[in-house]
Amino acid sequence: MRIGVISALYPPTAIGGAEIMAQQLVDGLRDQGLDVFVLTLQAPQAPMTDEPHVHRVPLQNIYWPYERGQKPPSLLRRLVWHALDTSNPWMVQQVRQWAREKNLDIINTHNLQGFSTGVWQGLQTLNLPIVHVLHDFSLLCPRTVLYKNGRVCGLHERRCTECRWLTAPRANHTTSVSAVVGVSQFILQLHREHGLFRQARGQVIYNALGPQKNLRPAATRSRIDPLRLGFLGRLDQAKGLDVLLAAAEILRLKGFPVQWVLAGKGPSQDIERWQMQYPMLDLQWRGFIEPDTLWPDVDALVFPSNSYEALGNVILEAASAAKACVASRHGGGVELIEEGVSGAFFEPGNAHDLARVIFELDQEHGRWHDMGLHARQKAQAFTTQRRLRQFTDLFKDVLHAHRT
Image (cartoon, rainbow, N blue to C red; front, side, top):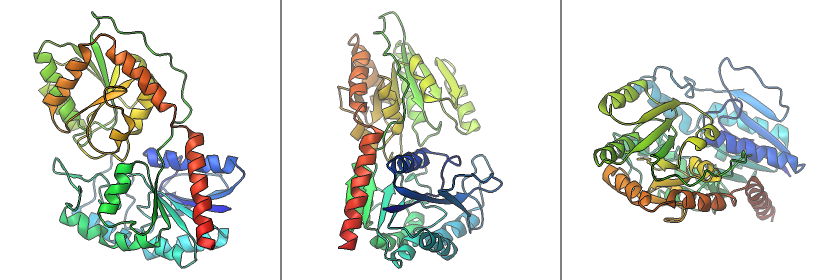
């Protein structure tokens, strides 16, 4: 079985979990002795890699969209970029040529921003079955997050005009896909509610934890020690930093001591504004750090996302270190937590409810520690071996059905 994997970004060019998960799958398939070939975009000024199974092609569009920290393009340029990305004929031609040269049996696509979903129709003309993996909401929202003007959108049929217009052809493109994989039941169901992949076989295959350091669970916290709660992710409103800080202030005013460790990057102006708004909170702003360096310094994770999350890998990472999670009750992260056992939920966007949940959990001595142990036990099921086996079986089934 000769497998082609298409991902807009691929390590060492990577900005998120989707690219890491794509590489994890490719490495596992190659370790099984399968022929796997990767097609990805070549970042401007980036050195070419020497991996023979990875082919990098230049992006044929009006700008490179993946450079963080650069000045945002004008609205007109963004609209032109996304309109072209809906079905980019130059990228379709490159993909078809690569697939013919590699003599592939099956195609596995991941995030396609830059390639465009038009490549699915181009590959279908080569009589190739396609398995697509949903890592985010880019097929429904050009911003990929279904979050605009401080509000979530996209539940059921409610999406903004811009999203509906720019992504309209993609529902038709999905008819070329043989099977679709959601990293959560939530993301798979949401896409089908909007009319995408209705004819494709659907399956949920959760992300897997990579190699983890064997972190020893912390001892039960003493009654006299302050509670230490952590956040790991992008420091912005979509990820719920405003809700977290408001809840922290509510707890402080109640006389409930909490130390907060906030790790990640975000707009500097927002961080400065929050620091001025909450000068009395016990906050540590860590910046970008490796997850393993955070867990020894916190008793639990807070995952307060205002926007929908496809899954929430950080919940799994915390669980592997025996840290429970308090998360907003929506999106794919809900599927990773057993309420009251390995974590707890609060109503999205409700700082008072988040403060209440934290306060009530802390009233029972040792509760955080016990939930962390249950979380670690639950996380042990999310192995790379399980994920690889599920994908391998799916590829075989899809290829067999296609041939017969």
